[in-house]
Amino acid sequence: MIEDDQARPADKQTAVAGGPATATDPELTGPPGPPERNGPSPARRPRTPDPRELGFTPQRPVPWLAPLLLVSTGLRTLLALLFGAYLDKRELQNSLPSEVHRQVGPDGDLWLDYVADLGDGFNATYTVAYLLSRAELEVDGTRLPRGQMLVMGGDQVYPTASGAAYENRCKGPYQAALPQPPVDGTAPALYAVPGNHDWYDGLTAFLRLFVRRRDDSIGGWHTPQSRSYFAVELPANWWLYGIDGQSGAYLDDPQLIYFEKAAERLDADSRVILVVPEPSWVKSGDHPEAYDAIDYFIRTVVAPSGAQVRLLLSGDLHHYARYTGPDRELITCGGGGAYLFPTHKLPERIQVPPPDTLVRRSSPSRSYDLAGRYPEAERSRRYAWGIFHRLPRRNPGFATLLGVLHTMLMLTMAGVALPRVEPTAQRLFSIPLVIVLAVTMLGAAFFAKPPSANGKRHVRHWILGVGHGIAHVALAAGGAWAWLQLPFWDAAWPMPAVAAAVVYGPVAGFVASQLVALYLLVAGAFGVNLNELFAGQGIEDAKSFVRFHIAADGTLTGYPVAVDRISRRWRAEPDGAPDDAWLSPEQAPRFRLAEAPFTIR
Image (cartoon, rainbow, N blue to C red):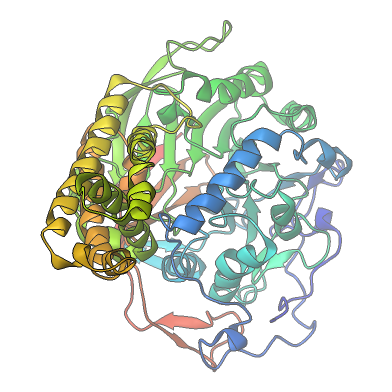
């Protein structure tokens, strides 16, 4: 395993890049001068993309509909829901330092990058990391320097958190993109908030990677945070608060106390960027309670100081979308590497907080209009039609499972329909028919809206789910009729079952996968199973991140970068400079601005 390349100070209170800390306030961690360059010699650069050279194993995209993955992820999700409160480590973090950080560039301004939902397949994750690590990007004729600060907005690893998963899907790619601090000696800072996938192990692996006193770096990025949440002072009286929402749970007392103390520095001219794990402003349409925690935080922590929250940032939904309103911008940017999520079903206008919230003292509800999205709505619709060829290709295990289930259902129906059959086989195939049909119908109905899913269950969920189940039963009945026309059924037992598994199963699996694809396409048009429609495709292209610039006069400008096509072939750069990426693309990724730059003053 390749070790971290640069020796780091053990005390994070003096380990943030920029200017000196405020001497009168030991809790305000200011950045020191450039780190020393005469430490241990850098690790040997890889000569090939072989994992033994890289020190980590590049991963394929997560096959989200793979049967074993569905079962394991479902179990972990269930355990997180049932026992999440018992595994909540946030209150234990009260014993960790309560540092308030400071990030200001040498010219009194700051370049800040935001990326989220990144720990998936290597090609997409590393493409984004590679672009973030470049000293400068020229995007549509505009030169954008690398961020002096990088914020990861949640779900740094998929499908579930573990030390090995973080190493292979997050730390490894980002270390390969920026192995050491830039040659000018200034290490960019990296902060991260946990998302729901980071919480599946109770936040253990997240804390070990991003919150540590030794080796506090990921390649050339320095990781100064001391908890799973953080407050950072930015130039011109801007502040950035990163909140740990623990998969939508309440905000714990130690976290609230930490931010209340940090908010003592705010005044009526302060402007706050709030980084949260999920875009509850979008989700509150179906989940009115989703925005309650954010609204509570703004009302009780920020508002008493007179400061204004001018920007809300989140990932979780794997696309870029910006809503603009009279008081703030609401931005979702989860394009760091995970499968694409559609944009064509986004509401054109939302009300935040939602009018039907049950909170009695909620903030006044305001309207926000959709001002930008990526991919564009028409392109998102075209992507949806790709489900027919991508579903079986990306998820062969799912198609196999469908083949097995349909083979069993067909044999059951055939055993009931054909009177001339051995008694043993008759009992084997006829007894479970009612049960199999019931399981098929219930499974299809709950697939449209699982009982564990949050939000309202509408009539459309039942209609689409039951219709999906009927379609599968009809497919099995047609398959049973066709199978009985073939000579296999007359063979001696168990040849009919063997022949069905070898001949019928693969064909039924493919046809059933196309039926599921058709259902997902139709259901998606009604806003049902949109996640499954795109998760089943695992689209690696159409990634995004946002590069912000805070000028010395306080003007914040956002540059949303859209990566239309990622790179898929890489070559090692063994003779590169110490801070050069270990791997460079054989074909450069295509990127542009997702929308015109926007400003906040």
